[in-house]
Image 1 (cartoon, rainbow, N blue to C red):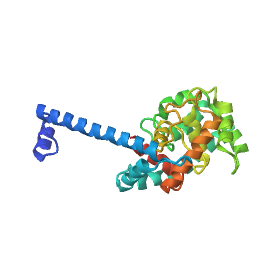
Image 2: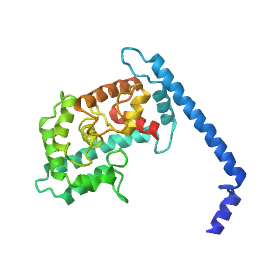
Image 3: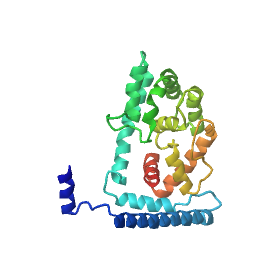
Image 4: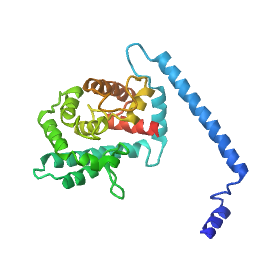
Length: 262
């Protein structure tokens, strides 16, 4: 191991953690943190000063994020993320359909499908893109019968004209008493059914909406503070932001929100 670090030092790939180097790192960190804070303050002021009374979003900061994301050639860049989300919608819908149509569903069989949505340690990349959902997957699996009934009800009643509030009510009617099946999971389900009408509602997306000037949505969402009416308002505002940024669907908007958040 020592020889490996010696080789990296000689090649200039790493440098010794001297007191001077650490002090310089701390100074730069403080410098960049101040600039980030200044940028946030400028964006907040711009949002308050320039967002029209009509309720149109402020797009300056998100447009800048999207520009950076489009220039990013890594796996986090817009091209890769947009394609991944386009591919994962079909996979996610198949998992939901398998749960809904399994006439002999058990907790184990539910969990196998649900892990395809939220992921598990050492498994394949999840079909859903919300982080941390995998941590509660076993708890959610305890409610497999309620989730299946909710999906079956949604499949029976969802039409091309169903409003987000109605669709959210269908799920919440079954899942309000289901532990750890909150707005994030329910909105992921709806988004899987139609990513042009139903937005993903979680901390990342709410933070993105705040950047657009829509600060009425709580950063920490729960079944206690998100109503069907609020979810519909969130979807309506998200559609304004999507259109303003020229994105194809709400999946692409969620990718931008995630990029901005992280």
